[in-house]
Image 1 (tube, rainbow, N blue to C red):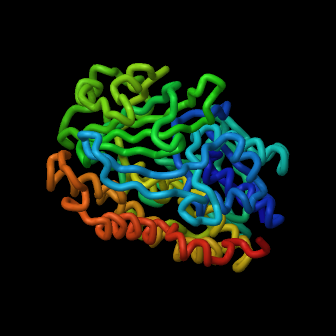
Image 2 (tube, rainbow, N blue to C red; image 1 turned 90 degrees about the vertical axis):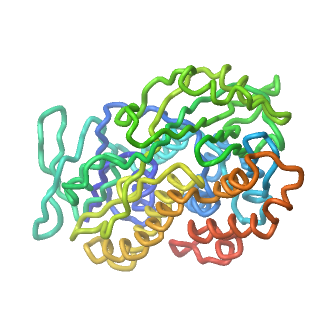
Length: 415
């Protein structure tokens, strides 16, 4: 009854740890030959952190993440629009973490190797499968040599360019690009505002997001993650299909040259970066179905979304945990995958669409439309009640309303 997982990203590794917790054999195939800590900063919301804690990794994530104290929104003039506490400071039972994506992946990988042994095979790409009488026959390509591996079910956690998803939906094509390009980097600098603030400034067509992802050193400097976003006409000739190319300051810094605020000098932060990477902001359309017989999708393979609202990795972790509970309730078979699909897909599809609608960042766009970013008193522009409702509405969609989450039972019983 082995569960076969394609992909050793955050979702696939969390699924492997969950299967181990439940006594279910698992095998993970990862196409890269060496897993290294790639990526930039991300945020994990409290409902995902709860699951990391329940997997017994509380000390490990605490060692590599920063407990986010607040999120703060500003206009393009640097004027404060709205701020609210996060994690423990907001009354959640669990923290929110700002963390390097690669560090989180390596933490999960080390836990898998320590607990499960050699179950992650690198340099092995799942290229297809077929159903057989007692499970699935999975085709695995190892450097041009394809062999067949047997398991009970197949989990496609193979990311944005999922081969499993492509097999389900062969006509889907490339990810959807709506015109935004992101330049992402990290800079050693003194943390701003509370020292653990996730700050956002701008509006829908030009935005800057930044937060620390390490504790300060003896000199007071931390690793500050930042994202500069600009929109272009969707038919422009940008590098839409190159997802990890070196960025050029000349392509975006001029647009931010005037963004030197009293709480943060954004141009200086950009110039001091070690490296800058460029990414098109892309997602995929919501699917009508994730599970087909004994195979299903998980994480970005199922619901690639815009990096708005800090929910990509969070939702992948929740996928893995709900899938585990469905195995307990239905067995390691097609019925479990169908139940998982019915529970998770509508929720994740709603987050994808909410992110396309600018998610909680819409508060900045409303201010831009009403004032052009300059105002004297924010309450005269957008009332506190309106601001709070925008934030609450997104939390309800994404599953981390504080009262509901604190009262919710554990996804997997026994915690």
